[in-house]
Image (cartoon, rainbow, N blue to C red; front, side, top):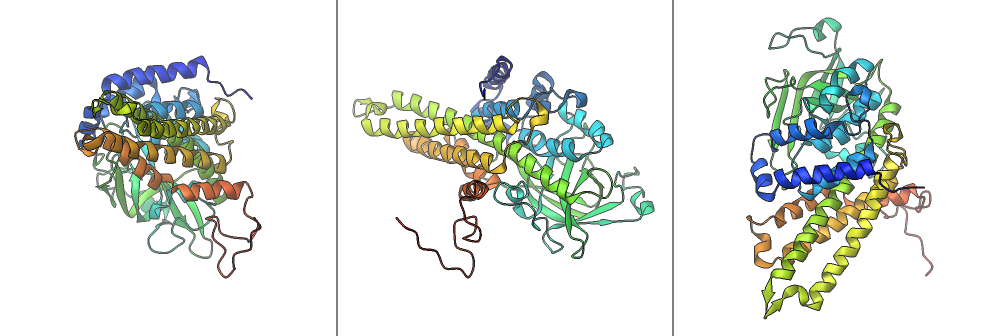
Amino acid sequence: MDAAFTEEQHEIRRTLRELLLKRCGPDEVKAAVRTPPGYDTELWQRLAGRLGLPGLALPTAYGGVGCGPTELALACEETGRVVLPSPLVATAALAAPLLLALGSERQRTALLPALAAGELTATLAVPGGQLATALALTGPNDGDWAGGGRAGGIQARRVPEDAAAAPSRNGERPAGGGWRLYGEAGQVLNGHTAEVLVVAAHTGGFAQSRTLLFLVRAADAGAARPGAGPGVPGLLRTRQTALDETRPQARLELRDVPAELLGEGDGDPAAVTRALAATGVVAAAALAAEAVGAADTALARTVAHVQQRVQFGRPIGSFQAVQHRLADLYVALQAARSAAYYAAWSAGGGRSAPEGAGAAEPGVVALALAQALEALRAVAAEAVQLHGGIGFTWEHEAHLYFKRAACDELLLGPVHRLRARAAEEAGLFPDGAGEPGGAPAPGRAPEAVEV
Protein backbone atom coordinates (compact mmCIF):
# COMPACT_ATOMS: atom_id res chain seq x y z
CA MET A 1 0.00 0.00 0.00
CA ASP A 2 1.34 3.43 -0.94
CA ALA A 3 -0.77 6.19 0.57
CA ALA A 4 1.71 8.99 -0.10
CA PHE A 5 0.33 12.00 -1.91
CA THR A 6 1.47 12.66 -5.45
CA GLU A 7 3.05 15.89 -6.63
CA GLU A 8 -0.18 16.73 -8.45
CA GLN A 9 -2.14 16.37 -5.22
CA HIS A 10 0.33 18.59 -3.38
CA GLU A 11 0.02 21.17 -6.14
CA ILE A 12 -3.77 21.22 -5.78
CA ARG A 13 -3.38 21.96 -2.08
CA ARG A 14 -0.74 24.65 -2.57
CA THR A 15 -2.65 26.47 -5.30
CA LEU A 16 -5.92 26.44 -3.41
CA ARG A 17 -4.29 27.51 -0.14
CA GLU A 18 -2.55 30.42 -1.81
CA LEU A 19 -5.77 31.68 -3.39
CA LEU A 20 -7.86 31.33 -0.24
CA LEU A 21 -5.29 33.10 1.93
CA LYS A 22 -5.60 36.12 -0.36
CA ARG A 23 -9.37 36.13 -0.83
CA CYS A 24 -10.91 34.51 2.24
CA GLY A 25 -9.83 36.10 5.51
CA PRO A 26 -12.10 36.23 8.60
CA ASP A 27 -13.54 39.61 7.58
CA GLU A 28 -14.36 38.35 4.09
CA VAL A 29 -16.03 35.26 5.55
CA LYS A 30 -18.22 37.35 7.87
CA ALA A 31 -19.22 39.59 4.99
CA ALA A 32 -19.98 36.70 2.65
CA VAL A 33 -22.35 34.90 5.03
CA ARG A 34 -24.52 38.00 5.26
CA THR A 35 -25.18 38.12 1.55
CA PRO A 36 -28.44 36.54 0.30
CA PRO A 37 -26.69 33.43 -1.13
CA GLY A 38 -24.61 32.99 2.02
CA TYR A 39 -21.31 32.84 0.16
CA ASP A 40 -19.13 34.90 -2.18
CA THR A 41 -20.41 34.04 -5.65
CA GLU A 42 -17.51 35.80 -7.36
CA LEU A 43 -14.97 33.75 -5.41
CA TRP A 44 -16.95 30.57 -6.11
CA GLN A 45 -16.85 31.26 -9.85
CA ARG A 46 -13.13 31.83 -9.65
CA LEU A 47 -12.59 28.58 -7.76
CA ALA A 48 -14.68 26.76 -10.34
CA GLY A 49 -13.15 28.42 -13.39
CA ARG A 50 -9.50 28.54 -12.36
CA LEU A 51 -9.21 25.36 -10.26
CA GLY A 52 -12.21 23.31 -11.40
CA LEU A 53 -13.09 22.77 -7.75
CA PRO A 54 -16.69 21.48 -8.12
CA GLY A 55 -15.59 19.09 -10.89
CA LEU A 56 -12.50 17.82 -9.13
CA ALA A 57 -13.87 14.29 -8.65
CA LEU A 58 -15.83 14.14 -11.93
CA PRO A 59 -14.60 12.35 -15.08
CA THR A 60 -13.20 14.43 -17.91
CA ALA A 61 -15.95 13.05 -20.16
CA TYR A 62 -18.40 15.21 -18.23
CA GLY A 63 -16.23 18.29 -17.99
CA GLY A 64 -14.53 17.35 -14.74
CA VAL A 65 -10.86 17.35 -13.78
CA GLY A 66 -10.70 13.55 -13.71
CA CYS A 67 -9.37 13.16 -10.18
CA GLY A 68 -11.23 11.44 -7.36
CA PRO A 69 -12.44 11.59 -3.74
CA THR A 70 -8.88 11.87 -2.44
CA GLU A 71 -8.27 15.15 -4.26
CA LEU A 72 -11.71 16.40 -3.26
CA ALA A 73 -10.90 15.69 0.40
CA LEU A 74 -7.57 17.50 0.14
CA ALA A 75 -9.35 20.50 -1.35
CA CYS A 76 -11.89 20.39 1.49
CA GLU A 77 -9.04 20.45 3.99
CA GLU A 78 -7.91 23.76 2.52
CA THR A 79 -11.42 25.22 2.45
CA GLY A 80 -11.82 24.12 6.06
CA ARG A 81 -8.76 26.11 7.09
CA VAL A 82 -10.55 29.35 6.25
CA VAL A 83 -14.09 28.02 7.02
CA LEU A 84 -14.98 28.92 3.45
CA PRO A 85 -18.73 29.41 2.93
CA SER A 86 -19.48 27.73 -0.40
CA PRO A 87 -21.71 25.08 -2.04
CA LEU A 88 -18.71 22.75 -2.48
CA VAL A 89 -19.82 19.98 -0.12
CA ALA A 90 -23.45 20.09 -1.29
CA THR A 91 -22.52 20.08 -4.98
CA ALA A 92 -19.36 17.98 -5.25
CA ALA A 93 -19.71 15.59 -2.30
CA LEU A 94 -23.48 15.01 -2.15
CA ALA A 95 -25.27 15.68 -5.44
CA ALA A 96 -22.62 15.04 -8.12
CA PRO A 97 -21.72 11.48 -7.00
CA LEU A 98 -25.40 10.51 -7.10
CA LEU A 99 -25.87 12.00 -10.56
CA LEU A 100 -22.78 10.14 -11.74
CA ALA A 101 -23.83 6.83 -10.20
CA LEU A 102 -27.55 6.76 -10.99
CA GLY A 103 -28.23 9.32 -13.70
CA SER A 104 -29.05 8.38 -17.26
CA GLU A 105 -26.63 9.42 -19.97
CA ARG A 106 -28.96 12.25 -20.90
CA GLN A 107 -29.10 13.50 -17.31
CA ARG A 108 -25.34 13.27 -16.86
CA THR A 109 -24.62 15.09 -20.10
CA ALA A 110 -27.11 17.83 -19.30
CA LEU A 111 -26.08 18.50 -15.69
CA LEU A 112 -22.58 17.32 -14.82
CA PRO A 113 -20.61 19.63 -17.16
CA ALA A 114 -22.57 22.63 -15.84
CA LEU A 115 -21.89 21.55 -12.25
CA ALA A 116 -18.20 21.05 -12.97
CA ALA A 117 -17.93 24.52 -14.52
CA GLY A 118 -19.72 26.19 -11.62
CA GLU A 119 -22.61 27.29 -13.83
CA LEU A 120 -25.00 25.26 -11.67
CA THR A 121 -24.96 24.23 -8.04
CA ALA A 122 -26.78 21.22 -6.62
CA THR A 123 -27.66 19.64 -3.32
CA LEU A 124 -29.27 16.55 -1.78
CA ALA A 125 -32.59 16.99 0.01
CA VAL A 126 -33.48 14.33 2.57
CA PRO A 127 -36.62 14.75 4.70
CA GLY A 128 -36.72 14.71 8.46
CA GLY A 129 -33.08 15.60 9.05
CA GLN A 130 -32.09 12.03 8.14
CA LEU A 131 -29.09 12.88 5.99
CA ALA A 132 -26.61 10.79 8.00
CA THR A 133 -29.01 7.83 8.00
CA ALA A 134 -29.65 8.11 4.27
CA LEU A 135 -25.90 8.05 3.63
CA ALA A 136 -25.50 4.93 5.82
CA LEU A 137 -23.10 6.70 8.20
CA THR A 138 -25.02 6.14 11.43
CA GLY A 139 -26.76 2.89 10.52
CA PRO A 140 -28.14 0.89 7.61
CA ASN A 141 -30.02 3.02 5.09
CA ASP A 142 -32.56 0.41 4.03
CA GLY A 143 -35.31 1.70 6.32
CA ASP A 144 -38.16 4.17 5.84
CA TRP A 145 -36.11 7.30 6.52
CA ALA A 146 -37.74 9.05 3.51
CA GLY A 147 -41.14 9.10 5.18
CA GLY A 148 -42.40 5.57 4.75
CA GLY A 149 -45.71 6.80 3.35
CA ARG A 150 -46.44 8.84 6.47
CA ALA A 151 -46.68 12.57 7.05
CA GLY A 152 -43.43 14.41 7.57
CA GLY A 153 -41.60 12.96 4.60
CA ILE A 154 -41.67 13.55 0.86
CA GLN A 155 -44.04 11.51 -1.29
CA ALA A 156 -43.73 10.93 -5.02
CA ARG A 157 -46.63 9.99 -7.28
CA ARG A 158 -46.98 9.33 -10.97
CA VAL A 159 -49.18 11.55 -13.08
CA PRO A 160 -50.50 11.02 -16.61
CA GLU A 161 -48.04 12.03 -19.30
CA ASP A 162 -50.37 14.73 -20.63
CA ALA A 163 -50.57 16.30 -17.17
CA ALA A 164 -46.81 16.08 -16.78
CA ALA A 165 -46.37 17.96 -20.03
CA ALA A 166 -48.72 20.78 -19.10
CA PRO A 167 -47.08 24.23 -19.27
CA SER A 168 -45.86 25.74 -16.02
CA ARG A 169 -46.59 29.24 -14.79
CA ASN A 170 -43.84 30.74 -16.88
CA GLY A 171 -45.15 29.03 -20.00
CA GLU A 172 -42.34 26.47 -20.30
CA ARG A 173 -42.69 22.72 -20.35
CA PRO A 174 -41.42 21.22 -17.09
CA ALA A 175 -38.98 18.34 -17.20
CA GLY A 176 -41.24 16.44 -14.84
CA GLY A 177 -41.15 13.06 -16.51
CA GLY A 178 -44.53 12.09 -15.09
CA TRP A 179 -43.78 12.57 -11.37
CA ARG A 180 -44.96 15.01 -8.71
CA LEU A 181 -43.43 15.51 -5.25
CA TYR A 182 -45.29 16.54 -2.12
CA GLY A 183 -43.79 17.13 1.31
CA GLU A 184 -40.99 19.07 2.93
CA ALA A 185 -37.37 18.78 3.95
CA GLY A 186 -35.46 20.94 6.40
CA GLN A 187 -31.77 21.62 6.97
CA VAL A 188 -30.92 21.19 3.30
CA LEU A 189 -27.39 22.41 2.59
CA ASN A 190 -27.49 25.40 0.24
CA GLY A 191 -31.07 24.47 -0.53
CA HIS A 192 -32.16 28.10 -1.04
CA THR A 193 -29.73 28.69 -3.93
CA ALA A 194 -29.09 25.31 -5.57
CA GLU A 195 -30.39 25.19 -9.13
CA VAL A 196 -30.54 21.38 -9.12
CA LEU A 197 -32.19 19.46 -6.28
CA VAL A 198 -31.69 15.73 -5.83
CA VAL A 199 -34.69 14.83 -3.68
CA ALA A 200 -35.15 11.55 -1.81
CA ALA A 201 -38.85 10.65 -1.86
CA HIS A 202 -41.03 7.71 -0.90
CA THR A 203 -43.26 6.13 -3.49
CA GLY A 204 -45.40 3.06 -3.93
CA GLY A 205 -47.57 3.50 -0.84
CA PHE A 206 -47.45 0.87 1.87
CA ALA A 207 -47.94 -2.06 -0.48
CA GLN A 208 -44.88 -1.40 -2.63
CA SER A 209 -42.96 0.96 -0.40
CA ARG A 210 -39.64 2.14 -1.79
CA THR A 211 -37.37 5.17 -1.74
CA LEU A 212 -36.13 6.69 -4.98
CA LEU A 213 -34.24 9.83 -5.98
CA PHE A 214 -35.73 12.57 -8.14
CA LEU A 215 -34.37 15.60 -9.96
CA VAL A 216 -35.98 19.00 -9.54
CA ARG A 217 -34.67 21.84 -11.70
CA ALA A 218 -35.24 24.63 -9.20
CA ALA A 219 -33.84 27.27 -11.59
CA ASP A 220 -31.89 27.68 -14.79
CA ALA A 221 -28.20 28.40 -15.05
CA GLY A 222 -27.43 32.07 -14.58
CA ALA A 223 -30.57 32.80 -12.57
CA ALA A 224 -30.07 35.23 -9.73
CA ARG A 225 -29.21 33.72 -6.34
CA PRO A 226 -30.85 33.21 -3.94
CA GLY A 227 -34.38 32.31 -4.81
CA ALA A 228 -32.76 31.08 -8.01
CA GLY A 229 -35.11 32.85 -10.36
CA PRO A 230 -38.82 32.17 -10.68
CA GLY A 231 -38.35 28.51 -9.82
CA VAL A 232 -40.94 25.83 -10.45
CA PRO A 233 -44.62 25.79 -9.45
CA GLY A 234 -45.24 24.58 -5.92
CA LEU A 235 -41.64 24.90 -4.68
CA LEU A 236 -41.02 27.21 -1.71
CA ARG A 237 -37.47 27.63 -0.44
CA THR A 238 -36.70 29.46 2.78
CA ARG A 239 -33.24 30.05 4.21
CA GLN A 240 -33.13 28.90 7.81
CA THR A 241 -31.32 30.48 10.71
CA ALA A 242 -28.27 28.35 11.49
CA LEU A 243 -25.70 28.50 14.25
CA ASP A 244 -22.95 28.09 11.67
CA GLU A 245 -23.66 30.80 9.12
CA THR A 246 -20.81 29.57 6.92
CA ARG A 247 -22.90 26.51 6.06
CA PRO A 248 -26.27 27.93 4.94
CA GLN A 249 -29.29 25.68 5.13
CA ALA A 250 -32.86 25.92 3.89
CA ARG A 251 -36.30 24.43 4.29
CA LEU A 252 -37.92 23.14 1.12
CA GLU A 253 -41.67 22.88 0.78
CA LEU A 254 -42.89 20.92 -2.23
CA ARG A 255 -46.53 21.07 -3.29
CA ASP A 256 -47.01 18.89 -6.38
CA VAL A 257 -43.65 19.94 -7.75
CA PRO A 258 -42.80 18.44 -11.16
CA ALA A 259 -39.81 16.12 -10.91
CA GLU A 260 -37.85 13.68 -13.00
CA LEU A 261 -36.79 10.25 -11.79
CA LEU A 262 -33.01 10.04 -11.41
CA GLY A 263 -32.01 7.22 -13.72
CA GLU A 264 -33.89 5.16 -16.24
CA GLY A 265 -36.90 2.87 -16.10
CA ASP A 266 -38.95 2.66 -12.91
CA GLY A 267 -35.99 3.01 -10.56
CA ASP A 268 -34.08 0.42 -8.55
CA PRO A 269 -34.36 0.90 -4.75
CA ALA A 270 -31.37 -1.37 -4.15
CA ALA A 271 -29.24 0.70 -6.51
CA VAL A 272 -30.38 3.88 -4.76
CA THR A 273 -29.36 2.44 -1.39
CA ARG A 274 -25.93 1.46 -2.68
CA ALA A 275 -25.37 4.82 -4.36
CA LEU A 276 -26.33 6.72 -1.20
CA ALA A 277 -23.94 4.59 0.87
CA ALA A 278 -21.11 5.20 -1.62
CA THR A 279 -21.89 8.92 -1.57
CA GLY A 280 -21.79 8.82 2.22
CA VAL A 281 -18.22 7.52 2.03
CA VAL A 282 -17.18 10.45 -0.18
CA ALA A 283 -19.06 13.04 1.89
CA ALA A 284 -17.71 11.77 5.21
CA ALA A 285 -14.13 11.72 3.92
CA ALA A 286 -14.53 15.29 2.64
CA LEU A 287 -16.08 16.51 5.89
CA ALA A 288 -13.39 14.79 7.98
CA ALA A 289 -10.64 16.48 5.98
CA GLU A 290 -12.45 19.81 6.23
CA ALA A 291 -12.67 19.44 10.02
CA VAL A 292 -8.95 18.67 10.20
CA GLY A 293 -8.14 21.78 8.19
CA ALA A 294 -10.30 23.95 10.45
CA ALA A 295 -8.74 22.45 13.59
CA ASP A 296 -5.23 22.98 12.23
CA THR A 297 -5.78 26.69 11.65
CA ALA A 298 -7.56 27.20 14.98
CA LEU A 299 -4.68 25.50 16.82
CA ALA A 300 -2.02 27.45 14.92
CA ARG A 301 -3.69 30.76 15.74
CA THR A 302 -4.05 29.75 19.38
CA VAL A 303 -0.36 28.86 19.63
CA ALA A 304 0.57 32.20 18.08
CA HIS A 305 -1.67 34.01 20.56
CA VAL A 306 -0.26 32.37 23.70
CA GLN A 307 3.25 33.22 22.53
CA GLN A 308 2.34 36.91 22.34
CA ARG A 309 -0.13 37.35 25.20
CA VAL A 310 1.76 38.47 28.32
CA GLN A 311 0.42 37.89 31.80
CA PHE A 312 2.29 38.11 35.11
CA GLY A 313 5.29 39.44 33.22
CA ARG A 314 5.68 36.47 30.83
CA PRO A 315 3.91 34.96 27.79
CA ILE A 316 1.09 32.69 28.88
CA GLY A 317 2.45 30.03 26.53
CA SER A 318 5.42 29.61 28.88
CA PHE A 319 3.18 28.23 31.61
CA GLN A 320 3.34 24.46 31.81
CA ALA A 321 -0.43 24.04 32.18
CA VAL A 322 -1.00 25.86 28.90
CA GLN A 323 1.71 23.85 27.18
CA HIS A 324 0.13 20.57 28.32
CA ARG A 325 -3.25 21.59 26.97
CA LEU A 326 -1.79 22.55 23.61
CA ALA A 327 0.24 19.34 23.44
CA ASP A 328 -2.90 17.26 23.99
CA LEU A 329 -4.63 19.15 21.21
CA TYR A 330 -1.71 18.61 18.86
CA VAL A 331 -1.73 14.85 19.48
CA ALA A 332 -5.50 14.67 18.90
CA LEU A 333 -5.17 16.71 15.70
CA GLN A 334 -2.41 14.53 14.27
CA ALA A 335 -4.38 11.38 15.01
CA ALA A 336 -7.45 12.88 13.33
CA ARG A 337 -5.36 13.93 10.32
CA SER A 338 -4.02 10.40 9.86
CA ALA A 339 -7.53 8.96 10.08
CA ALA A 340 -8.92 11.56 7.66
CA TYR A 341 -6.16 10.93 5.12
CA TYR A 342 -6.74 7.20 5.30
CA ALA A 343 -10.48 7.73 4.84
CA ALA A 344 -9.82 9.91 1.79
CA TRP A 345 -7.36 7.39 0.36
CA SER A 346 -9.73 4.46 0.90
CA ALA A 347 -12.73 6.42 -0.44
CA GLY A 348 -10.87 6.54 -3.74
CA GLY A 349 -10.31 2.80 -3.66
CA GLY A 350 -6.67 3.30 -2.73
CA ARG A 351 -6.00 5.38 -5.82
CA SER A 352 -7.07 8.70 -7.25
CA ALA A 353 -9.13 7.37 -10.16
CA PRO A 354 -12.83 8.29 -9.91
CA GLU A 355 -13.94 4.73 -10.57
CA GLY A 356 -12.52 3.75 -7.19
CA ALA A 357 -14.95 6.02 -5.39
CA GLY A 358 -16.96 4.45 -2.62
CA ALA A 359 -14.70 1.39 -2.30
CA ALA A 360 -14.28 1.96 1.46
CA GLU A 361 -16.78 0.61 3.93
CA PRO A 362 -19.03 3.22 5.58
CA GLY A 363 -17.74 2.21 9.01
CA VAL A 364 -14.16 3.14 8.11
CA VAL A 365 -14.94 6.70 7.11
CA ALA A 366 -17.54 7.03 9.88
CA LEU A 367 -14.82 6.35 12.43
CA ALA A 368 -12.45 8.82 10.75
CA LEU A 369 -15.19 11.45 10.68
CA ALA A 370 -15.94 10.89 14.37
CA GLN A 371 -12.29 11.38 15.28
CA ALA A 372 -11.97 14.51 13.14
CA LEU A 373 -15.14 16.05 14.58
CA GLU A 374 -13.99 15.34 18.14
CA ALA A 375 -10.60 16.91 17.43
CA LEU A 376 -12.18 20.03 15.94
CA ARG A 377 -14.57 20.36 18.85
CA ALA A 378 -11.74 20.10 21.40
CA VAL A 379 -9.46 22.51 19.53
CA ALA A 380 -12.22 25.08 18.96
CA ALA A 381 -13.29 25.00 22.61
CA GLU A 382 -9.71 25.43 23.85
CA ALA A 383 -9.12 28.20 21.32
CA VAL A 384 -11.95 30.21 22.84
CA GLN A 385 -10.63 29.58 26.36
CA LEU A 386 -6.96 30.29 25.67
CA HIS A 387 -7.75 33.48 23.79
CA GLY A 388 -9.27 34.78 27.00
CA GLY A 389 -11.86 37.55 26.94
CA ILE A 390 -11.39 38.29 23.26
CA GLY A 391 -12.03 34.65 22.34
CA PHE A 392 -15.80 34.85 22.61
CA THR A 393 -16.26 38.26 21.03
CA TRP A 394 -17.96 38.66 17.67
CA GLU A 395 -15.00 40.54 16.23
CA HIS A 396 -12.60 37.63 16.75
CA GLU A 397 -12.63 34.62 14.42
CA ALA A 398 -12.54 31.95 17.15
CA HIS A 399 -16.32 31.67 17.16
CA LEU A 400 -16.34 30.69 13.47
CA TYR A 401 -14.44 27.50 14.25
CA PHE A 402 -16.45 26.80 17.39
CA LYS A 403 -19.74 27.05 15.48
CA ARG A 404 -18.38 24.93 12.63
CA ALA A 405 -17.43 22.22 15.15
CA ALA A 406 -20.88 22.22 16.73
CA CYS A 407 -22.85 22.16 13.48
CA ASP A 408 -20.71 19.62 11.63
CA GLU A 409 -21.58 17.04 14.25
CA LEU A 410 -25.27 17.76 13.71
CA LEU A 411 -24.84 17.48 9.95
CA LEU A 412 -23.47 13.94 9.65
CA GLY A 413 -23.29 12.82 13.26
CA PRO A 414 -23.57 12.61 16.17
CA VAL A 415 -20.14 11.25 17.04
CA HIS A 416 -21.36 8.40 19.23
CA ARG A 417 -23.58 7.11 16.42
CA LEU A 418 -20.68 7.28 13.96
CA ARG A 419 -18.55 5.21 16.33
CA ALA A 420 -21.39 2.78 16.88
CA ARG A 421 -21.71 2.34 13.11
CA ALA A 422 -18.00 1.57 12.84
CA ALA A 423 -18.25 -0.95 15.68
CA GLU A 424 -21.28 -2.55 14.07
CA GLU A 425 -19.47 -2.85 10.72
CA ALA A 426 -16.49 -4.43 12.47
CA GLY A 427 -18.73 -7.02 14.15
CA LEU A 428 -17.98 -5.89 17.69
CA PHE A 429 -21.61 -6.27 18.70
CA PRO A 430 -22.80 -9.91 18.95
CA ASP A 431 -25.93 -10.64 16.94
CA GLY A 432 -28.95 -9.68 18.97
CA ALA A 433 -26.85 -8.51 21.92
CA GLY A 434 -27.78 -4.89 21.63
CA GLU A 435 -28.54 -1.88 19.57
CA PRO A 436 -25.85 -0.05 17.55
CA GLY A 437 -25.57 2.59 20.27
CA GLY A 438 -24.38 -0.02 22.76
CA ALA A 439 -27.63 -0.27 24.75
CA PRO A 440 -29.28 -3.67 25.18
CA ALA A 441 -32.08 -4.51 22.78
CA PRO A 442 -35.63 -3.79 23.98
CA GLY A 443 -36.84 -6.42 26.40
CA ARG A 444 -33.38 -7.92 26.88
CA ALA A 445 -31.36 -7.59 30.07
CA PRO A 446 -27.70 -6.61 29.82
CA GLU A 447 -25.37 -9.57 29.81
CA ALA A 448 -22.74 -10.01 32.48
CA VAL A 449 -19.23 -9.08 31.45
CA GLU A 450 -16.13 -10.69 32.88
CA VAL A 451 -13.32 -8.34 33.87
